[in-house]
Amino acid sequence: MKNFNLTKAIIPNTFTALNSFCGFLSIVFASQGNYDLAAYAIFGAAFFDAADGIIARMVGTSSRFGVELDSLSDVVSFGAAPSLLIYFLYFNEFGFIGIILSSLVLLFGSFRLARFNVQLEDLTNKSDFKGLPIPVAALTLTSFVFAFHKNNTVPEPYSYFVIPLVVLVSLLMVSQVKYDTLPQIFKQTPKERVITALLFLSGLFIVILTAGTALFYIFISIVLFGILRKMISFFFNSKQNEEITYNEETN
Image (cartoon, rainbow, N blue to C red; front, side):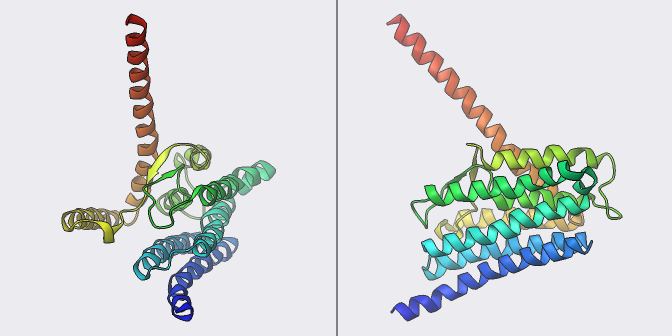
């Protein structure tokens, strides 16, 4: 039985290893000046990162080992790789300050993953994330490069958004802002699966129609939606607390 379980675990762990490999490829491509290929490699890492979790749940091999291995892979693919990509493409012009700025994604992403692993209790049921997930942060930056990178640089006016974008996604990773997990298709009702499929196909159609540019707007919308929801929640909680205080004072 143990051998059988080990055999089943090899499948999702292979996808996790491919995630790491894509991250390594991205670093190699970025160091060679092949920024588009570096971005594609990070997208590939994201595919394998999503697939390993789905497969692990399908074959029933979700484990603490898998969680730790996945986090180590994520540090490479979604921490080091995008940090180096954005450094070689843009921040190398700023000397040591550029090194610090580009390292924020790696450093804050590492803290984000460490916090996630420490706080994780249920390996199979994750309803939401506390802080922006590191793959979303990485894909937001990567899709920005993919959309606006021209002639080995980020032209104006888009270059003005690079620093604020890096700082924003880095801080959000270690924030208390909640973000939803990917839909767990195998736990959805048939109607929910249809809706999920339609949303996915609609997004895919828009991405193809815009030659990939829409990817950035999709990811930045996810980032900003978490902030907006946090602000709305804070506003309503403040109103409720004021009403409770008022009722206590008048009674």
